[in-house]
Image (cartoon, rainbow, N blue to C red; front, side, top):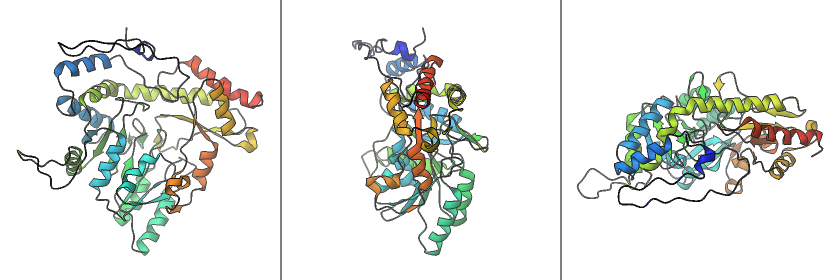
Length: 406
């Protein structure tokens, strides 16, 4: 029987290579309906068995290379490096772009902290820009105006980092047009964008570098892991050297600079390799989940769903609703609490970085749109393997907040 989320909890752990001892773990306690649980294809067991029996466990050998080739095919980038996490990919991207202490790095304020944390830890100064109502991603008009002002004062950013949000691509073409005018490179944070498309091409294409995530909650997961991708082979060669502790080609350990231990293990790469062929089916499943939410909730006054601009196809990694309390008679937090009481996980959209205490002194441009989206936006359970009956539970619980008085 194919391994599914239901059978995975009782399936035995794979045997170790000959001479080892097989073991198993009890099924976990029942959990609530989760936001974005991993979905297993049934091919992971065979992939793991092959990895273990081959003896390749470390972040080296044929399996990570095969995973990189599969990521390249999925993303359209010719050069890919598999790494331990999406954050590691971003960190290496910043290093490839030469970010140094005191440099400015600009990004969308509506994102997870990992987008900017590596740059800040490198000594860069973040600047947070607002998003558009149309896509909830970085506002290109705002960016263009701010870049012109920065050029006038002689302080352009070292990099601009647009973010693909909840499966929706940023308008990379418009962003690139702004940045190319001033020679500012673009690093796309596509950690949430795998499977999304911008004007027919995969997320991140057009940026100097793009970072992807294969964390446990992503549309395709390796149980962890990430990837850095580029059109430029030299950038990925540099990132590969830095990811391997910056060892120079010598019979002894020689280092001209310091690097990181960022390699992706063969075990995790095997899991990701088994999942990547199902990417398009997973996108279709999540878009279907979004469609059912739209059909089941679209008539509620004051409730809207995350928009999809005409120039993009969202993967709908997460389905997100927006609740206007002045029209709905309820608000995002009351709906979230009602779902929690029903055993259903939901989560507010990202708290804008300009509102985070860690960045209280960072410069910002706008922020009102992102702040409203945070106050009104709620991410709903969106798993690729979500059953219609489970989704009906979510829809009924939300509708009760309108007609049941929550």
